[in-house]
Each structure stands twice: as C-alpha cells, then as structure tokens.
Amino acid sequence: MLGHDVELLLKQEKKPYLASDRDVDITRPDQIKDFIRDTRIEYIINCAGYTAVDKAEEEKEKALQINGEAVKNLAGAALEKQAVLIHISTDYIFDGMKSEPYREEDEPKPLSLYGLSKLKGEEHVLNMLKRYYILRTAWLYGKNGRNFVFTMLNSLKTKDEIRVVDDQQGTPTYSKDLAAAILVILRTPLLPYGIYHFTNEGETTWFGFTGEIYRQAVQMKMVDPPVTLRPVTTKEYPLPARRPKYSVLSRDKIKKALNIRIREWKDALGDFLQTVKEDER
Ligand SMILES: NC(=O)c1ccc[n+]([C@@H]2O[C@H](COP(=O)([O-])OP(=O)(O)OC[C@H]3O[C@@H](n4cnc5c(N)ncnc54)[C@H](OP(=O)(O)O)[C@@H]3O)[C@@H](O)[C@H]2O)c1
Image 1 (tube, helix red, strand yellow):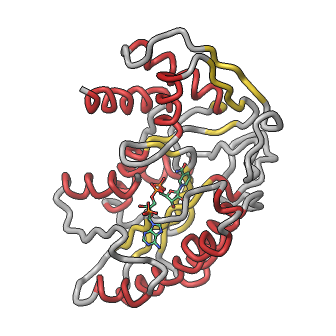
Image 2 (tube, protein in one colour):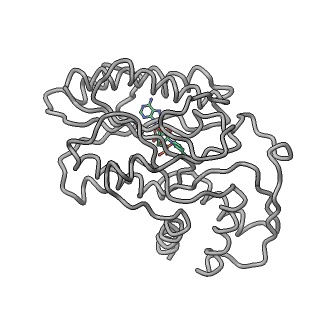
C-alpha cells in the first residue's frame, strides 16, 4: 500500500529510484545485495512488512523475521552503501495507556506480537545506524492494499447493520499523505536523524472512522442508506491481538522539522474516497 504511493511520487518527481516487490525478499541478504549491486544509493525506503496484526499472533516466527530480523539486512545494506535508511514503524509499539498524544521519546511497550516485531525492527535500526529516519504511523489506508476503509465500504454496501469498536482511539492516515511526507524528507538534507511520528491530523475511534466513511460515501452516492452502525467495546468484539486503547501520535516534531502542514483525517479520507469512486466508474 505505502510502497505503491511512494513509488508513484518518486516517478512524478522524476527522482531516480529502484523499486522492488516480492522479487527481493528482505529476509534474504543475498537478494538485497544482488538488487543494489553496482548502484549508488542515497536512501533505502523500507515499506515492506508483515502487516497482518491478528495472524501475527499465530505466525510469530514469520512476523519477527520480516519486521525484525530483515530490518538488520536493510540496515546492513545502508551501511554498505553509505545510504540513509527510512524505515516505517507503528503506533502499536505503545501500550495505549496514555491519554494524550504519544511523543517520539515515550517508552514503547507493545501489547501484541506484531507490535513487538516492529519494535525489534526499530531496535536494529537504532543499534546499527547513525543515519536513519524511523517514521511511526497509524491506521493506514490507501489505494493499493487491503485496509479498513475498503472493508467498511464493502460492509456498507452489503449489510444492514455493522458493529464497530468504539473504545480504541487513534488517527486514520492516508498512505498518499505519508508518502508525500517521505518525499519532503528526501528534499530536506539537513533534517536531524531519528524517530518521527506521522499521521493525519485529529483523532477518532474505529466507530467514528466508520461513521465518517458512511457519511461521505452516502454524500458521494457510493453507498445507499440506511445502514445501522452500532458502537461496541473491544470486549464485545474480541480479536487475537491486543490493541492499544489510545494510540494517537503527536505530529509536533515532524511538522516543525519539515515545516509542513498535515491534513485533517476527514479531508484526507474525502480525497481517498473520491479516487475510489473514480476507479469504480
Ligand atoms: N497498515 C497499517 O494500518 C499500518 C499502520 C502502522 C504502520 N504500518 C507500517 O507501514 C508500513 C507499510 O504498511 P502497508 O500497510 O503499506 O503494508 P502492506 O500493504 O501490507 O505492504 C507490505 C508489503 O511488504 C511485502 N512483504 C512482506 N514480506 C516481505 C518480504 N520478506 N520481502 C519483501 N516484501 C515483503 C508484502 O508482500 P505480500 O503482500 O506479498 O505479503 C507487501 O507488499 C509497514 O511497515 C507497516 O508495518 C502500517
């Protein structure tokens, strides 16, 4: 999802790049080496990951391998090429016990195997590199991948009633906006290395997010009302992986450092739904 949007922007901005998909398995150092052989590289942007949060509770080894160990391979490649590693991480490294936005220096305490595996990845970057950006994001959706917005659009079209969790607070984030922020990082050579949080502005619950998807989709005539939306608690909607109750990330550091404004999540969602509607035509 994110990888597609980053590639599209690199292409639009005419930046020279090499992009890979499953053709380069990041758990295989030899494949990474082959891919970047004889190429001068300034930045490595790692958008790959094991992102099935619930399945990770079963597929522990696989998640740890891809989100943890494989990051060592990419950090090794960055060292070899004297490149900067841009690595993507998650709000799920936090336990969600705070009631105000998480800052970059707050202590990670993952509740799930997915969160733990992503934290391991961060640790490899911190231990191996001086020149890196770790970008933590949250509740990502975009055009090229399975995500909550597509799931809800589908449910809104096919069901009369939807139950959605209303006691987890976070910020929906459009992958296109995160990709744009990554491009700004590439254009900001004096940006201090370190950890940065990026999400869209604002906060809501999964139920609030669904309500807004519904409202905008009806307005755009993508969905026929009425559909009943029912708020439920996490307890009433049990899933294998535990999630933080509150995982809003503070955007203060990145906004100041990059001198950017970030869109409200509702505005970004509107933009996204518009593209989905155009694609449906
Ligand atoms: N999605 C979210 O809500 C969310 C929230 C916070 C942070 N993040 C982080 O944001 C980043 C991008 O997420 P996304 O949602 O764009 O993920 P995504 O759509 O699931 O894309 C991840 C990609 O990595 C690929 N991949 C998996 N294992 C690989 C391997 N060993 N070698 C090479 N490629 C491999 C996947 O291929 P296959 O599809 O073939 O497996 C997939 O194309 C990830 O680091 C994720 O942890 C995501």
